[in-house]
Figure 1: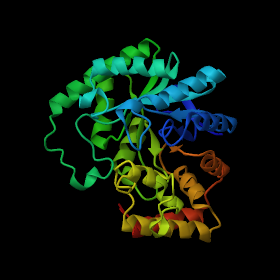
Figure 2 (figure 1 turned 90 degrees about the horizontal axis):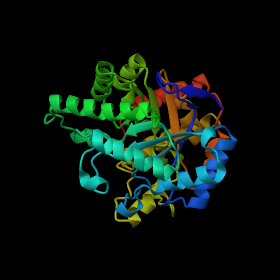
Figure 3 (figure 1 turned 45 degrees about the vertical axis):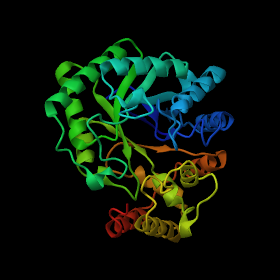
Length: 352
Protein backbone atom coordinates (compact mmCIF):
# COMPACT_ATOMS: atom_id res chain seq x y z
CA UNK A 1 0.00 0.00 0.00
CA UNK A 2 1.17 3.53 -0.80
CA UNK A 3 2.56 5.49 2.13
CA UNK A 4 2.38 9.20 2.94
CA UNK A 5 3.89 11.55 5.48
CA UNK A 6 1.59 13.41 7.87
CA UNK A 7 2.04 17.12 7.25
CA UNK A 8 5.59 18.31 7.82
CA UNK A 9 6.24 15.70 10.51
CA UNK A 10 8.45 12.64 10.15
CA UNK A 11 5.54 10.26 10.73
CA UNK A 12 4.96 8.09 7.66
CA UNK A 13 1.69 6.14 7.50
CA UNK A 14 -0.30 3.96 5.13
CA UNK A 15 -2.50 5.85 2.66
CA UNK A 16 -5.57 4.27 4.28
CA UNK A 17 -6.20 4.22 8.04
CA UNK A 18 -8.10 1.61 10.05
CA UNK A 19 -10.66 3.15 12.40
CA UNK A 20 -11.22 1.41 15.73
CA UNK A 21 -14.11 3.28 17.34
CA UNK A 22 -16.35 0.18 17.55
CA UNK A 23 -13.71 -2.01 19.23
CA UNK A 24 -15.21 -3.19 22.50
CA UNK A 25 -18.81 -2.45 21.60
CA UNK A 26 -20.14 -3.57 18.21
CA UNK A 27 -16.80 -5.28 17.52
CA UNK A 28 -15.62 -7.71 20.19
CA UNK A 29 -11.95 -8.18 21.03
CA UNK A 30 -11.45 -11.31 18.91
CA UNK A 31 -12.91 -9.62 15.83
CA UNK A 32 -10.95 -6.43 16.54
CA UNK A 33 -7.70 -8.39 16.65
CA UNK A 34 -8.64 -10.20 13.42
CA UNK A 35 -9.32 -6.83 11.77
CA UNK A 36 -5.91 -5.48 12.76
CA UNK A 37 -4.28 -8.67 11.48
CA UNK A 38 -6.10 -8.34 8.15
CA UNK A 39 -5.24 -4.65 7.83
CA UNK A 40 -1.56 -5.31 8.46
CA UNK A 41 -1.55 -8.10 5.86
CA UNK A 42 -2.43 -5.57 3.12
CA UNK A 43 -0.07 -2.88 4.37
CA UNK A 44 -2.67 -0.83 6.24
CA UNK A 45 -0.40 0.00 9.16
CA UNK A 46 -2.09 3.21 10.40
CA UNK A 47 -4.72 2.79 13.14
CA UNK A 48 -6.78 5.52 14.75
CA UNK A 49 -8.32 5.46 18.22
CA UNK A 50 -9.38 7.83 21.03
CA UNK A 51 -9.58 7.72 24.80
CA UNK A 52 -13.39 7.95 24.68
CA UNK A 53 -13.82 4.94 22.34
CA UNK A 54 -15.80 2.78 21.84
CA UNK A 55 -18.70 4.89 20.66
CA UNK A 56 -22.33 4.41 19.76
CA UNK A 57 -23.05 4.89 22.52
CA UNK A 58 -20.27 6.44 24.61
CA UNK A 59 -20.47 5.10 28.15
CA UNK A 60 -18.43 6.00 31.20
CA UNK A 61 -17.71 2.35 31.92
CA UNK A 62 -16.21 1.70 28.46
CA UNK A 63 -14.00 4.79 28.13
CA UNK A 64 -10.54 3.61 27.07
CA UNK A 65 -11.63 0.09 26.12
CA UNK A 66 -10.76 0.44 22.42
CA UNK A 67 -7.23 1.51 23.37
CA UNK A 68 -6.97 -1.46 25.73
CA UNK A 69 -7.96 -3.86 22.95
CA UNK A 70 -5.30 -2.39 20.66
CA UNK A 71 -2.80 -2.62 23.50
CA UNK A 72 -3.54 -6.30 24.02
CA UNK A 73 -3.06 -6.92 20.29
CA UNK A 74 0.26 -5.08 20.31
CA UNK A 75 1.46 -7.06 23.33
CA UNK A 76 0.30 -10.39 21.91
CA UNK A 77 1.69 -9.94 18.39
CA UNK A 78 4.77 -7.81 18.98
CA UNK A 79 3.71 -5.65 16.03
CA UNK A 80 4.38 -2.25 17.61
CA UNK A 81 7.23 -1.36 15.25
CA UNK A 82 5.15 -2.36 12.23
CA UNK A 83 2.24 0.02 12.84
CA UNK A 84 1.47 3.68 13.48
CA UNK A 85 -0.96 4.41 16.32
CA UNK A 86 -3.05 7.56 16.57
CA UNK A 87 -5.28 8.45 19.49
CA UNK A 88 -6.99 11.52 20.94
CA UNK A 89 -7.82 13.39 24.11
CA UNK A 90 -11.54 14.02 24.41
CA UNK A 91 -12.94 17.51 24.42
CA UNK A 92 -15.79 18.56 26.75
CA UNK A 93 -17.72 15.33 27.47
CA UNK A 94 -19.82 14.31 30.42
CA UNK A 95 -18.29 10.82 30.44
CA UNK A 96 -14.63 11.92 30.46
CA UNK A 97 -13.27 14.27 33.16
CA UNK A 98 -16.90 15.00 34.14
CA UNK A 99 -17.27 17.47 31.28
CA UNK A 100 -14.28 19.61 32.22
CA UNK A 101 -12.42 21.06 29.21
CA UNK A 102 -8.89 19.80 28.77
CA UNK A 103 -5.85 21.95 29.49
CA UNK A 104 -2.12 21.31 29.50
CA UNK A 105 -2.25 19.32 32.73
CA UNK A 106 -5.09 17.15 31.44
CA UNK A 107 -3.17 16.51 28.21
CA UNK A 108 -0.15 15.28 30.16
CA UNK A 109 -2.31 12.92 32.23
CA UNK A 110 -4.30 11.70 29.21
CA UNK A 111 -1.16 10.91 27.22
CA UNK A 112 0.21 8.79 30.06
CA UNK A 113 -3.15 7.02 30.48
CA UNK A 114 -3.36 6.23 26.76
CA UNK A 115 0.21 4.91 26.77
CA UNK A 116 -0.70 2.54 29.61
CA UNK A 117 -3.83 1.28 27.88
CA UNK A 118 -2.05 0.90 24.55
CA UNK A 119 0.86 -0.90 26.26
CA UNK A 120 3.40 1.17 24.33
CA UNK A 121 6.02 3.80 25.01
CA UNK A 122 4.96 6.17 22.22
CA UNK A 123 1.95 7.47 20.28
CA UNK A 124 2.66 8.31 16.66
CA UNK A 125 -0.10 10.93 16.32
CA UNK A 126 -1.79 12.56 19.31
CA UNK A 127 -4.92 14.55 18.49
CA UNK A 128 -7.24 17.01 20.21
CA UNK A 129 -10.66 15.45 19.66
CA UNK A 130 -12.83 18.55 20.03
CA UNK A 131 -12.06 22.27 20.39
CA UNK A 132 -12.84 23.42 23.91
CA UNK A 133 -14.39 26.62 22.55
CA UNK A 134 -17.08 24.69 20.63
CA UNK A 135 -17.43 23.18 17.19
CA UNK A 136 -19.81 23.03 14.25
CA UNK A 137 -19.14 19.31 13.62
CA UNK A 138 -21.92 16.73 13.68
CA UNK A 139 -24.68 18.95 12.29
CA UNK A 140 -24.06 21.77 14.76
CA UNK A 141 -23.35 23.96 11.73
CA UNK A 142 -27.07 24.66 11.36
CA UNK A 143 -27.13 26.64 14.62
CA UNK A 144 -23.45 27.43 15.10
CA UNK A 145 -22.84 30.60 17.16
CA UNK A 146 -19.20 31.60 17.81
CA UNK A 147 -20.13 35.01 19.24
CA UNK A 148 -19.39 33.99 22.82
CA UNK A 149 -15.81 32.97 22.15
CA UNK A 150 -12.98 34.79 23.91
CA UNK A 151 -9.99 35.10 21.56
CA UNK A 152 -7.46 35.91 24.28
CA UNK A 153 -8.58 32.94 26.37
CA UNK A 154 -8.47 30.66 23.34
CA UNK A 155 -4.92 31.67 22.44
CA UNK A 156 -3.79 31.23 26.06
CA UNK A 157 -5.37 27.76 26.04
CA UNK A 158 -3.52 26.90 22.84
CA UNK A 159 -0.20 27.98 24.37
CA UNK A 160 -0.84 25.85 27.47
CA UNK A 161 -1.82 22.73 25.49
CA UNK A 162 0.97 23.10 22.93
CA UNK A 163 3.46 23.47 25.78
CA UNK A 164 2.29 20.15 27.21
CA UNK A 165 2.51 18.45 23.83
CA UNK A 166 5.95 19.95 23.22
CA UNK A 167 7.09 18.37 26.49
CA UNK A 168 5.60 15.04 25.43
CA UNK A 169 7.38 15.18 22.07
CA UNK A 170 10.68 15.97 23.76
CA UNK A 171 10.13 13.06 26.15
CA UNK A 172 9.51 10.71 23.23
CA UNK A 173 5.93 9.99 24.31
CA UNK A 174 4.35 11.35 21.13
CA UNK A 175 5.81 11.88 17.66
CA UNK A 176 3.34 14.28 16.02
CA UNK A 177 0.20 16.21 16.94
CA UNK A 178 -3.12 16.85 15.27
CA UNK A 179 -6.63 18.20 15.63
CA UNK A 180 -10.14 16.88 15.11
CA UNK A 181 -13.47 18.59 14.39
CA UNK A 182 -11.65 21.91 13.99
CA UNK A 183 -12.39 24.95 11.85
CA UNK A 184 -10.21 26.92 9.44
CA UNK A 185 -9.71 29.68 12.00
CA UNK A 186 -8.79 27.17 14.70
CA UNK A 187 -6.31 25.31 12.50
CA UNK A 188 -4.66 28.59 11.51
CA UNK A 189 -4.32 29.77 15.10
CA UNK A 190 -2.92 26.45 16.31
CA UNK A 191 -0.23 26.69 13.63
CA UNK A 192 0.53 30.33 14.43
CA UNK A 193 0.82 29.72 18.17
CA UNK A 194 3.04 26.68 17.62
CA UNK A 195 5.40 28.77 15.50
CA UNK A 196 5.46 31.54 18.08
CA UNK A 197 6.24 29.41 21.13
CA UNK A 198 8.27 26.69 19.46
CA UNK A 199 5.59 24.07 19.97
CA UNK A 200 4.87 21.13 17.68
CA UNK A 201 3.06 22.08 14.48
CA UNK A 202 -0.20 20.38 13.62
CA UNK A 203 0.50 17.55 11.20
CA UNK A 204 -3.08 16.41 10.69
CA UNK A 205 -6.71 17.39 11.12
CA UNK A 206 -9.35 14.69 11.49
CA UNK A 207 -12.68 15.98 10.20
CA UNK A 208 -15.71 14.42 8.58
CA UNK A 209 -15.44 14.19 4.80
CA UNK A 210 -17.36 12.20 2.21
CA UNK A 211 -19.16 12.79 -1.11
CA UNK A 212 -22.18 13.74 1.01
CA UNK A 213 -20.35 16.08 3.38
CA UNK A 214 -17.79 18.48 1.92
CA UNK A 215 -17.37 21.65 4.02
CA UNK A 216 -13.63 20.90 4.08
CA UNK A 217 -13.30 21.66 0.36
CA UNK A 218 -12.99 25.44 0.74
CA UNK A 219 -11.41 27.35 3.64
CA UNK A 220 -10.09 24.34 5.52
CA UNK A 221 -8.52 22.87 2.39
CA UNK A 222 -6.80 26.19 1.68
CA UNK A 223 -5.37 26.41 5.19
CA UNK A 224 -4.27 22.77 5.14
CA UNK A 225 -2.49 23.11 1.79
CA UNK A 226 -0.65 26.26 2.83
CA UNK A 227 0.21 25.02 6.32
CA UNK A 228 1.02 21.46 5.16
CA UNK A 229 -1.57 19.64 7.22
CA UNK A 230 -3.00 16.26 6.20
CA UNK A 231 -6.72 15.56 6.38
CA UNK A 232 -7.67 12.34 8.15
CA UNK A 233 -11.20 11.93 6.85
CA UNK A 234 -13.67 10.15 9.08
CA UNK A 235 -17.06 8.82 8.00
CA UNK A 236 -15.97 8.54 4.33
CA UNK A 237 -19.09 6.40 3.77
CA UNK A 238 -21.33 8.84 5.67
CA UNK A 239 -21.59 6.43 8.62
CA UNK A 240 -22.85 3.73 6.26
CA UNK A 241 -25.48 5.85 4.52
CA UNK A 242 -23.61 5.57 1.21
CA UNK A 243 -23.61 1.76 1.34
CA UNK A 244 -27.34 1.63 0.56
CA UNK A 245 -28.15 -0.60 3.52
CA UNK A 246 -30.58 1.97 4.92
CA UNK A 247 -32.55 2.34 1.68
CA UNK A 248 -36.34 2.25 1.93
CA UNK A 249 -36.12 3.01 5.67
CA UNK A 250 -34.35 -0.28 6.36
CA UNK A 251 -32.69 -0.69 9.76
CA UNK A 252 -30.38 -3.73 9.53
CA UNK A 253 -29.84 -5.58 12.78
CA UNK A 254 -26.48 -4.71 14.30
CA UNK A 255 -26.04 -1.63 12.14
CA UNK A 256 -24.84 1.64 13.60
CA UNK A 257 -28.32 3.14 13.38
CA UNK A 258 -29.95 0.10 14.98
CA UNK A 259 -27.47 -0.01 17.85
CA UNK A 260 -27.90 3.70 18.47
CA UNK A 261 -31.70 3.43 18.53
CA UNK A 262 -31.62 0.38 20.80
CA UNK A 263 -29.53 2.33 23.31
CA UNK A 264 -31.98 5.23 23.41
CA UNK A 265 -30.67 7.31 20.52
CA UNK A 266 -32.42 8.61 17.42
CA UNK A 267 -31.03 6.02 15.03
CA UNK A 268 -30.43 8.75 12.46
CA UNK A 269 -26.66 8.31 12.08
CA UNK A 270 -25.79 11.50 13.86
CA UNK A 271 -28.23 13.56 11.78
CA UNK A 272 -27.12 12.09 8.45
CA UNK A 273 -30.12 9.80 7.89
CA UNK A 274 -32.55 12.37 6.52
CA UNK A 275 -34.85 12.27 3.49
CA UNK A 276 -32.45 14.46 1.52
CA UNK A 277 -29.50 12.42 2.71
CA UNK A 278 -31.15 9.18 1.60
CA UNK A 279 -32.00 10.68 -1.79
CA UNK A 280 -28.41 11.78 -2.30
CA UNK A 281 -27.03 8.41 -1.19
CA UNK A 282 -29.31 6.66 -3.68
CA UNK A 283 -28.05 8.93 -6.46
CA UNK A 284 -24.42 8.13 -5.69
CA UNK A 285 -25.21 4.43 -5.59
CA UNK A 286 -26.84 4.65 -9.01
CA UNK A 287 -23.85 6.56 -10.41
CA UNK A 288 -21.45 3.89 -9.18
CA UNK A 289 -23.58 1.13 -10.69
CA UNK A 290 -23.65 2.92 -14.05
CA UNK A 291 -19.86 2.69 -14.13
CA UNK A 292 -19.70 -0.88 -12.77
CA UNK A 293 -18.20 0.28 -9.50
CA UNK A 294 -19.19 -0.64 -5.98
CA UNK A 295 -20.32 2.60 -4.31
CA UNK A 296 -18.14 1.86 -1.25
CA UNK A 297 -15.04 1.47 -3.38
CA UNK A 298 -15.98 4.57 -5.40
CA UNK A 299 -16.29 6.73 -2.28
CA UNK A 300 -12.86 5.74 -0.95
CA UNK A 301 -11.11 6.01 -4.33
CA UNK A 302 -12.66 9.45 -4.89
CA UNK A 303 -11.05 10.78 -1.73
CA UNK A 304 -7.61 9.95 -3.09
CA UNK A 305 -8.26 12.20 -6.11
CA UNK A 306 -8.75 15.35 -4.03
CA UNK A 307 -6.37 18.32 -4.50
CA UNK A 308 -5.06 18.15 -0.93
CA UNK A 309 -3.39 15.55 1.27
CA UNK A 310 -5.95 13.11 2.64
CA UNK A 311 -5.90 9.77 4.44
CA UNK A 312 -9.37 8.16 4.60
CA UNK A 313 -10.24 6.32 7.81
CA UNK A 314 -12.17 3.14 7.10
CA UNK A 315 -13.99 1.37 9.89
CA UNK A 316 -15.93 -1.88 9.99
CA UNK A 317 -17.94 -3.63 12.65
CA UNK A 318 -17.40 -7.07 11.07
CA UNK A 319 -14.65 -8.87 9.19
CA UNK A 320 -16.98 -9.23 6.22
CA UNK A 321 -17.30 -5.46 5.97
CA UNK A 322 -13.56 -4.95 6.29
CA UNK A 323 -12.78 -7.54 3.62
CA UNK A 324 -15.21 -5.77 1.30
CA UNK A 325 -13.51 -2.44 1.92
CA UNK A 326 -10.05 -3.90 1.40
CA UNK A 327 -11.12 -5.55 -1.88
CA UNK A 328 -11.64 -2.14 -3.47
CA UNK A 329 -8.36 -0.55 -2.45
CA UNK A 330 -5.77 0.32 -5.07
CA UNK A 331 -8.20 1.08 -7.90
CA UNK A 332 -7.88 4.39 -9.77
CA UNK A 333 -11.09 6.35 -10.21
CA UNK A 334 -11.87 7.02 -13.90
CA UNK A 335 -12.11 10.69 -14.86
CA UNK A 336 -15.64 10.22 -16.15
CA UNK A 337 -16.78 8.83 -12.80
CA UNK A 338 -15.03 11.64 -10.95
CA UNK A 339 -16.86 14.19 -13.11
CA UNK A 340 -20.12 12.40 -12.33
CA UNK A 341 -19.45 12.82 -8.61
CA UNK A 342 -18.82 16.52 -9.19
CA UNK A 343 -22.17 16.84 -10.96
CA UNK A 344 -24.02 15.06 -8.17
CA UNK A 345 -22.38 17.32 -5.61
CA UNK A 346 -23.96 20.31 -7.32
CA UNK A 347 -27.35 18.61 -7.25
CA UNK A 348 -27.00 17.52 -3.60
CA UNK A 349 -24.63 20.10 -2.03
CA UNK A 350 -25.63 19.77 1.65
CA UNK A 351 -28.01 16.85 2.00
CA UNK A 352 -27.85 16.77 5.81
